[in-house]
Amino acid sequence: MKSSAIPLELSQIPLSVAQTLLLEPLKQHNQVTFRVLNPTTAPDLFAGETLERAGETYFHRPLRVWLDLAELLRCELELMALETDFLTLRFSQNIPTERDKTSSSNPEKYGAHTSFQRIKKLEEPYFLNDAVRALKWLELPPTARVLDLGVGSAEELHLLELAYPQHTFEVLGVDHSVSALELAKQRFPQHSFKVADINNLPADLGQFDLIISIGTFQSANIDLEPLFRRLLGHLTSSGRWLLAFPNSRYIGSKLTYGARRLNYSHPELSLLFKDVNFFKRYFQKHRYEVQITGKYYIWIAAKGIK
Image (cartoon, rainbow, N blue to C red; front, side, top):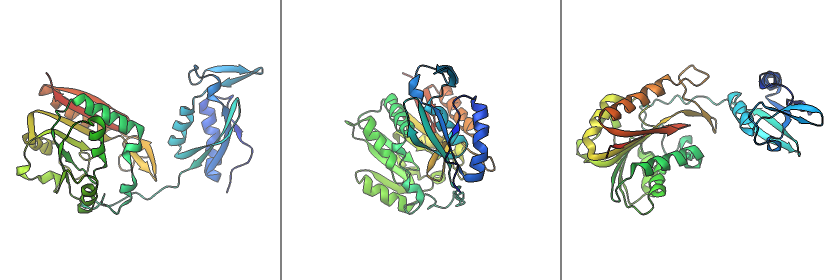
């Protein structure tokens, strides 16, 4: 069923009321069209401030407000019409997708032939810029040896090139997916890749100037604290760390904010905070300088205090 052709007028009511008005047509038709004040008419106002137009009072709301509300209501936001003073927008509910129930212990959960390979993290602005900024802050030596845990198909290794275009790194990527590592070898034939269980890394890996883990340490099958302490033996005396923990999930093809726990419909961040706090405390206790940043991924960068 399609929503009414007459858009709801939402520019003259508080957001709490506007949100309530959107819910019923979304429930009935899976979409709703509405008209709001064009935020470019008063770009210096805060969300919710009012302004006058032709004797009428309107609420100013940046486009970010409607993007955030679309995400909260699990909708796609579309621009339907652009006027000088108004926008016509539409929310269309995303079709729920069945949760991937593949066990984390399955080596091919994120293999070459899964939908995971469609995700291009470097096309996400926060991921790209937060990662490159953190890598630059680490001040890696020109010939650093790098260990990437859970490297998958190695798309993330492009970050090293972006942060240090003049450096030549020696990289070893480790993953338990044979098919994903085949893709990695095609992308980066100059680097080395090894099939291994991160919980049981070979003892002969050697030492590294940087250990990277992006979205791996939070996996259900990772015994985090014992693994981390074993990794210390693979780090040089001046070694650095770059760790990233997801604070997001995909609903269909849409990246949405907030770490989730099983049976929670909304973000629940306690486990994320627990992991981040563990590493922060450990690094600071052992005289590392620590930087924590991020939005959809929380990045922890650590280097020895000079």
